[in-house]
Amino acid sequence: MRLREKMFSLISDWKASGEFKSKFLKGTGISTAKFDYWLKKYNDLESASAKPCLDSRDFIHVGGVLEETASSVVAVLELSTPGGITIKVFE
Image (cartoon, rainbow, N blue to C red; front, top):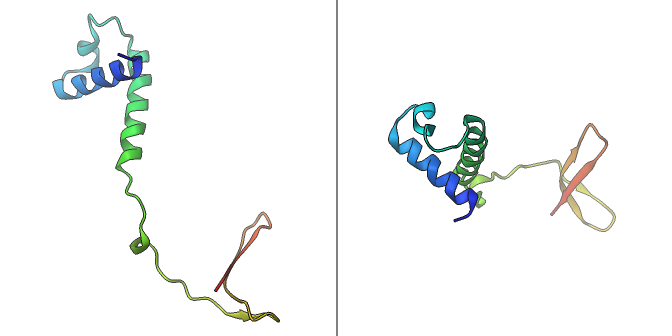
């Protein structure tokens, strides 16, 4: 068993136990600092997997000022950042 799997399994056991962390870690040979390191990794992974994926229903149509150019290409949206980057969306 890899270290990550071992630590994540230990964290799952701790969460299910309902014990205080210090009491749970007694006799395991794992320091609180090491456990906290892996707990952060575990929580980061959990929160990342809990984020929903975006689909087309998560977006709304944004109407913009239409600009016609000489070649009949229509810019429907233009965004400018403070850093000087301009993003144009064409129809």
